[in-house]
Structure formats: structure tokens, C-alpha cells
Length: 95
Image (cartoon, rainbow, N blue to C red; front, side, top):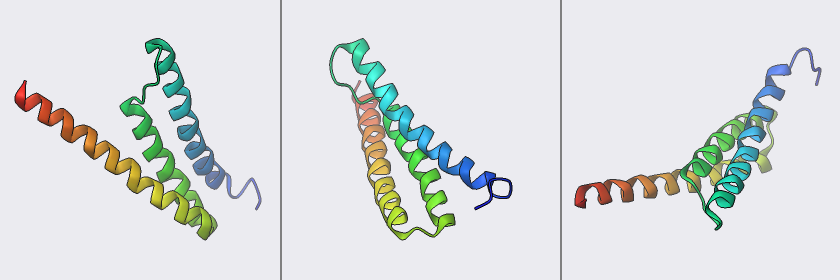
């Protein structure tokens, strides 16, 4: 792989890795502020975006192991976001 002709592929991969790093970093910051373990909603968004970019990277690289791993993770991240938003909507309707 020539860096000059496939810089965009590396950019996609590193963008995905950046989102995955940010989810752990931000979770750590929020937990330190609260003095307890907290998983903020941004954790799930960072996870979903990271998974999307890494899945794109894996597809372009034709790496079946990476494709399966990233596609299954995105289902979990999407489901968690759905559950969070559904609970927020329920709480708004009773409050």
C-alpha cells in the first residue's frame, strides 16, 4: 500500500481509532468528575461512529475478521442508544 495513493484509507482507519479512543477517554473524565463509574451517552455515540469508520476501513481492506467484529459491535451500540432515548422519552412523558 502506497501512502501517497491511499492516504484516504489510512484517514478512515485512524478516524475510527480516534473515536474509539475518545469513548474511553471521555468515560474516564466523566467518572473522575463524578467520583464513580459513569457511562455517558457520548460513549455510545463515539462507539457507533468509531465502529462505522472502522467497518468502512475493514470493508475497503477486505478483512472479514475485522468486518464481522465491527458490524456486530455497531448493533450493540445502536441498541444501547435506542434504549437510552426510549427511557428519556418515557421519563419526559411522566414528568
